[in-house]
Image (cartoon, rainbow, N blue to C red; front, side, top):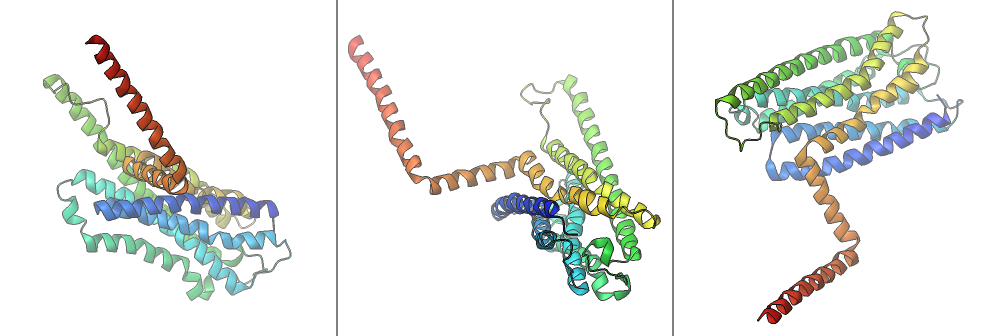
Length: 330
């Protein structure tokens, strides 16, 4: 590929993805350790996969900055493309897992914790990672999926056969995406029924202390998933749709559009996921806030301790004024 500007963009994007996801991973580990919530485990798996997306694309930065004459060996390129595809596929599958977890928690709230026990959570988390690993490293095991006329430019379409691309994109992504939309539509239907039920109870003497105008926890979780679905569809759908067009039309040269623009747009989903959860999930937001406060106390201890005497001096001054008023009044 050999574009210096594209290499700089990849370097900045990878740094942001790793930094943001690292903060979210630490916060989620602390929350899981405290609360032992299965839903947070799935979000933690999503954050780890997104972090690995940023980590794996750093390998492309050196090749981009090396110039157009840089030649990558075939096996090295196959392993590199498979390593980049693995966390991306795991992130896509885990997004579906988070949606299914929310669906199960809303539709079966009393049986949720009995269903989502430790072994089931481990299988649900490990399953998408194993499936993503199998799909991503399939060309490493099956050499017929590798491009025979490899020219030394390490790109996804330059090293993989269109057959493998069609299997991965058509079977894996679109099947998961349509099932993903189905569960999302079911969640929207359930949420609308809940809102309608609350409105019917309001004229029947619902206590005024109940804040009916404020969304419930289920509605907040649904809103989080809805935003996540929107970011996911906007990020990855153009890449996969144009990829299928490229496979169907062999004379259409859309490689540059796919590899320099649409693929980067899809990778940006790994940056949007932690931002969505960090902003919309109150527990994650509070945990990050507490982490920042603790970090501020450790880095700036002088400012922390200097502020205490000022607070005490202000308190003493207020007490002194109250005593003077009592003395004068007496």
